[in-house]
Amino acid sequence: MKGVSDVIAMLLMLVITIGIVGLAYSYISGIFVTRTAVVLSVDQATNCLGNTVNVFVRNDGTQTSGAVSVVVYNATMVTGTCTIPSITAGNLSSCSTTKVGGPGYYRIVVSTTGSSASGQVHCVS
Image 1 (cartoon, rainbow, N blue to C red):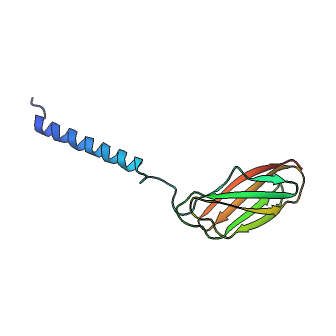
Image 2 (image 1 turned 90 degrees about the vertical axis):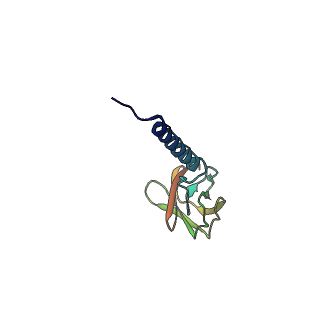
Image 3 (image 1 turned 135 degrees about the vertical axis):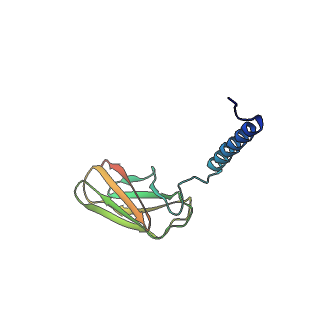
C-alpha cells in the first residue's frame, strides 16, 4: 500500500498553514468585531443625587447616533425621561431627569434607531 507522496503532503501542510495564518490575522485585525453602527451602553458613572438621576450613555459603535431616548423606571412606573440629541462614535454623553419616588433601584433604558441598552442606578434618597 502506498501513502501520499511527499510533494502532495507538503502542499497540503502549506495550504492548511496559510489558512490558519489568514484566519488569525483576520481575527486580530478586527474583521470579526461585532461593534458596528451604533452600540449604546449605560455608563457606570450614572448616578442619583437627591431627586435627580444623571444618566451617562456611551456610543461604542462606529457611527454617530440619532436622538437617544432615556427612560428611568422604578418598580412600577416611568419616573423620568430625557433625550440626548446625538452621541458621536466612541464618546460619552449625558442627560438629567427628575425622578419620582423614594430610595431604591431604578432601571434605565436608553434607545435610538437600531440600538438599545439598559442599566440600573441605586438612589439612597
